[in-house]
Image 1 (cartoon, rainbow, N blue to C red):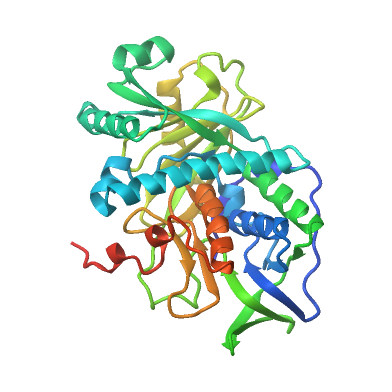
Image 2: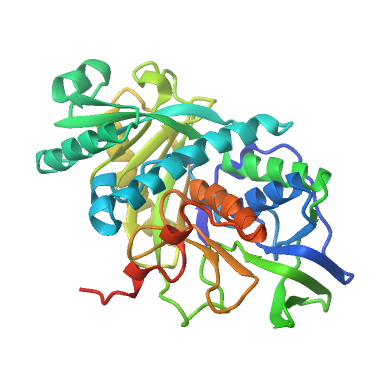
Length: 409
């Protein structure tokens, strides 16, 4: 399926990237990863660091799918606020999940320092502002909850916000511990470093069948090559055919994003923090190292990216208008814009873990706005599975978690 439409910014930032051959011979590995995007890259890198025999196959080019449409915000706060998640799954579980996300951001930062090339990875704070006065009580409750459980955050009143930023809102939360990254460069850096450490990488290689026998899994590619592996990892960003219909799956929607030309002056943007709001769907924005602004939002319940440029531009102009309302002095025009498919789950959490009915099959389906953070959690969880150990958030993100089995209201 087409995952995006329009003009993408991130691929234009890459220097000459390494190409990998298609798989033409049979191979036997401990782990076979399907998918060469963010999830597959992080998992492949972590496996290679541990010396685990693995291969990765990608039916197109590395970082050619959703990765190129990723806006590169790395936040531990989720699409569902912590106090709401506590009501949904319980205090201990919700706080544990938020802390796992915070740890994942820290681990991504550590990994970025291990890669030889520049991935434009920078630590950032995040500003979450109330979109309307009616959202203020919810925002204040979230601030108190984050503070209660030890998250580094400040509350900004309307006056505080107006004194620091060129816009005024009813209130905001400023959290520390997040980051931004160039997802295209990050994935290529991960894959190329993992290949140096022993990961076998194959582009233009599509798995067309997946069968298992006697605890061994066999993938056959479109060209007839065979991969035998103890574990198969689906890191393809959406629900594979092998899973569809057996467990509750997610909704595929579409979103919109754009990137401006370099701005003349970003001095009115304190700390180049990540910014988002409490609207539904929410609006978000960030800067880039060369002074551009990335904006996104206007999610719609339709999985097909908008291919018509005039129709796409109508949404993009709305995003640009929101940027100019916040920062009137940022007048550089838009240079890139796109529409992309993304997934959301009923409980706003990812699907990560073993297939409960098919031993040796592992899924990393990072639905939601924190896909890269979820990919990091997935890589750690997979290592626990391989060692027959229990990961601290395995019960929260597993595919057959109890909340998803409850009837929808």
